[in-house]
Image (cartoon, rainbow over all chains, first blue to last red; front, side, top):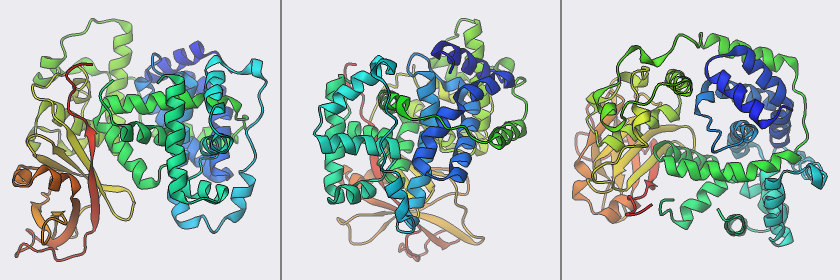
Length: 181
Length: 290
């Protein structure tokens, strides 16, 4: 992986229409972004479609990237992840019941990362998540990593959807306060 | 930061974490497209939560993915020639956006801007960026808007929004009218002070010989009230909400029906609502201080 500063330069070049820079940007980030969307979509074909759309959007919107606001990899991952979430939300309206197996597979936890490999921002966020009640920590992480809907979370936690809604909201506001957002 | 309610903050957070349903996501995207500060709040959340991706393992996509991406951007045409400075900016933009120093970074930004305008023609971002410009400038005459939302590079409307300081900033409300939570078909924007509204056609076209008509449905009213036929152009703007009180406007459901050409002859809807939505506050009234 390139450094964030190198990624910023590549995105600036992409904004000018530099295809070679775009290829380097893709090479440096594709595996991370694909990992993120595959985790949510759980299907190779859908994940490939989403990742294609995401990179086309990155190509088109590179000029909107603001290095003062976002880290380059988070900006790119958000584009890909938002697209993946849109796809699962639209699909789940018709097909949650058709794929009962998908939820069990998705229940595994994210890859452990040695503490020294974590960025300061990640440590800080995890500290804030860690202050939530254990069930809610799990709720927040499952929502983020697996892209689960409130309905899926409600099934997992065997609780009404409205309760999940309240927990999520409360958890996010607690995290916000903890982070000083 | 503007005075957003806890509801807004939570909505931004839930968008970023991903738990909203399809309809709520469409609403947030509509709000983001008319409200840069709300967008900044969503992006701040995405940034804070995005560090979690550090713990997601990398997976190599197949080489065909890159081939497809390259083909897709190849079809979008060459990038370089679309530089902005060929045409002077419109007068409106000049007022609020004085000349910027010419340096390299600026050129990068402007050319990207130009490209963005060309590429987003079919997306909600573009639609709404135009709405933003309308709102910020207080321009409600559709004639002043670019034709068919194929904004040309010289249409620097999106540049207008941040530095502009409208004389009477008021709350802006947005409703996304959809069919069963599907893709948005119309975006309704209402000015909280003047109650002027603009309806922007996003996707749907009526069948030949039919017209779309907009209705206000309120439990305070005995029957739906027509807000008029939606014109054949992309935008329709009207002052006809002025006779309703704010509570009615805020709580109402807005619905589009299919009527005979020219609209309902008797003031009653003749089809079930095809597209419906409710208003959400997209831009809170300007706070006295930052």
